[in-house]
Length: 96
Image (cartoon, rainbow, N blue to C red; front, side, top):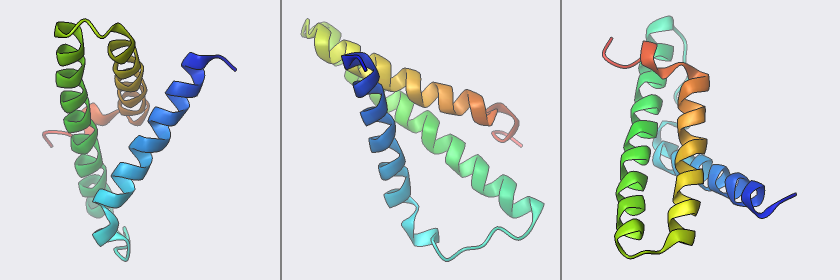
């Protein structure tokens, strides 16, 4: 397994851990209706978008400082998060 794949996997693990910790207060909440499911997925997708936005700023900072390794790491992380966003088809849950 290459270095890029390891970084990609680590980034996804960190993302899931962060998302889990951010939503831990809802751990006892059960999704019982379609409305509950859509509300949960909408919030989850918004969290993904916020994570992409924060990472994009880190990417720009790395580029300004000519830290190309950091830029590449953040790029792969953004790719992983955006791939998750796309796989969930988040566009149907946001603004509805």
